[in-house]
Image (cartoon, rainbow, N blue to C red; front, side):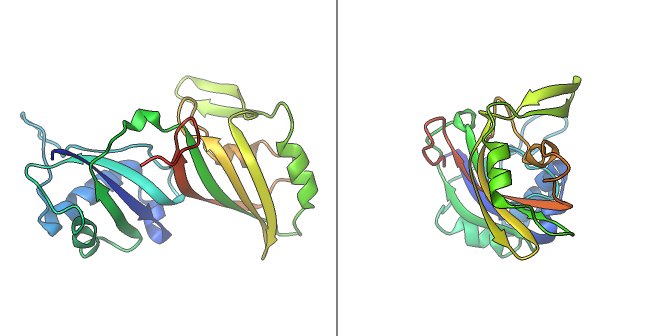
Length: 214
């Protein structure tokens, strides 16, 4: 047993920990728990950990996946609670196991959003009609600059319900190749439908056939 995978939650104030800072936090968690995390060799050794699909700052998640390596066998059933005992608030490990699949097989992400409106939410049928369009172009920024991205086909399975202060949204977006940041779903909306604030949470990952990925 060398290569392992952990599933964990990132919520509350922890949602504002950046990706790079999260890697440092995880290293300290393993150190405090006495877990035998493996490090690279060489002049500047680093912990052999990687987040399968990095999370945007400010987004909560119930399904983060992290691959890591250890120097000796560990009790996988006991490891989550050992890590949780020394984890900061908002980070909670739920599973540790030997992965049977590569992270590259992740394709879809189920997520939940809350659209908040200061002057009253639009009618749900208007949101349903918008997201059911055959083409939903949106401008997004990448390392290569700005470009027009097509959301239709890369965001699907929408459902909506009214909630206090706005509308709750459930949807499925492409997690990899291409990666769809749920914020693009808000950016694509016309002014009449756009919320004043939106918050997102990851719920679960799936493969290309919509089978749950672990």
